[in-house]
Image (cartoon, rainbow, N blue to C red; front, top):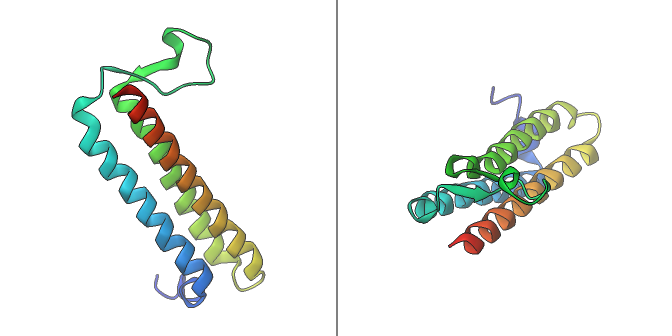
Length: 117
């Protein structure tokens, strides 16, 4: 398994992007866990839906964006490791996309929690 990610670990740009990505994902999870007790029973997490009860989800649904960011991180990391030998630029773009996803997820969660509390 170490040999699979050897090329990705040797590239400083990709490694730096994925380490910052892990930092943002962990900080999102810690932020949610600290503020979970003060959240109301229903959270406005589905903002694209019409006004009303459709926008609300239970408190546990606050983890859906985090799980999506983790899934994108894992998929991009695997694809990045596979394609690095042929096209390193694609691997770097996948790392940047994953980083952007985690940053935007962090902003979304912080903004939602601060709005509620």
